[in-house]
Amino acid sequence: MEIQVQTCTFFIKSKSRNCKFPRYGDSNFCNLHKGIQDQVCDENHEKLVNKIIPCFIDGRHFVSINKIRSHIRKCSRVRDIAYELNQPFCMHNNGPPHNLLNIREKLQVTETSHIEEINRKANKNNHSDSKKKLIVSKERLEFVDKLHDFCVREFGKNPHFESRQVDIDNLNLNRHELQAISISKEFTKRLINSENSISCNNSNNNLLFDAENSLIIEYGAGNAILSYWFIKECGKPQNKIKPSKFRSVIIDRESRRKQMEKLDESISSIRLRLDIEQFDINSLILVCNNEDISKESIRAHMYSSLGNGNVPWIISTLLEQKIWMHDSSGKQIQTIEEVEQLSKEELKYILTTLSNGGGPDISRLEETIINNFAKKKILKIFVISKHLCGNGFDLGLKSSQSAIKEMKSGSMLIIIMSPCCHHRCLISQHLGAEMLNQIATQEGLFDNTEECFNFLASISSWSTGTSDYRSNYGFKAKYILDSCR
Image 1 (cartoon, rainbow, N blue to C red):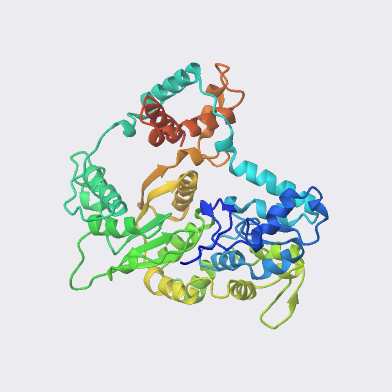
Image 2 (image 1 turned 90 degrees about the vertical axis):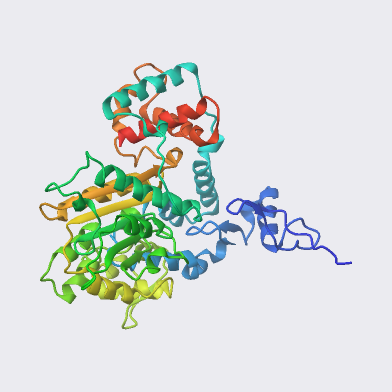
């Protein structure tokens, strides 16, 4: 009879399961988690020499406090961040993107007690929505009704209460493909084939996606299912004698094994592993619209925000921790002042060294941009997304708005984006949240605008999480938050 090995009882929140490693001795935990549990149980755990804490860059890693800096040198998350910052059209701001803002605060602390306090605060902020009790009253729900009625008068009917049916022939597809086809067909139905369609020069074909002068940018693309089906459904028929390739830019924070854009030879695409707020859309449009630009200038515009005092935030963060680097000549870089004097090429060399094979070959990306995107004017930009979670929708709108500055006169910017996960929205990033400023405190139901916003964001989860009267209030809250945008 086979003896069953007892596994560790430590619960891993990120994976929603217990640790699978075998227990250590008589303990209920494995060798790693035994150390963490001992610290929780020990009243004098501050005095422990080999204290275990989460990695500041990636909280899924646990490491000794004495070895934290040596771990950061080889942390896989540092490699991934360096690769992201080394890609074309990445904006290099002074700090990390919004989802990584707490990294620097943690790294500036050296005392164990302060580290623990920051970790506790971060954990509390991450789970504040689930732990904080939502105050729901009849008066607050009546307030939602009034606000929703106001939005309907100003912006039209709530689309969440309208049922639209799109005919799809092939039902042997997964739900993501069905959603992508549905969005593409709805666009065709409402803006191209409709009698009241919006068109230029009285030609409905002006809204079709053509290979000669159109560009698709998909945010939060995942496997790029929407780009693939959008080109299939809305692409203008090709000239068979001299066909051109459809151009597509895929933006997603994570690497994907399945990439739908590569399944069709008629699509020329570049996939950038970036946060939406890091994507330099203006430089991309400039490179495409300038027909006299040289190869050297194209490469310079790909990294226009790198150098000239702009230092990638991961490099400056590591230098602050006395984690030194070397330039291409082997010289050791120890201070931020030294790295600010480096050229674009030297900064790219350091990022390449840090990334150490963290993703696809960047030189291939550059060649694709030079050969298939540069010096080919853009008259129509389609910004599309099937699933922009929380404030990702707001970041997508901001990026699209900034694109208008570089577009030529007579060009069109067409935005087809679907917001979702409104319960994850933050007032600091939400567009148009000031609309609630006067209304929020009028009836004394909320102390401030932020409390009102958080209430609407919280009850928006009722739209899918409940099936009674609350579901309607969830859809109303979603529409109110979208009306602000």
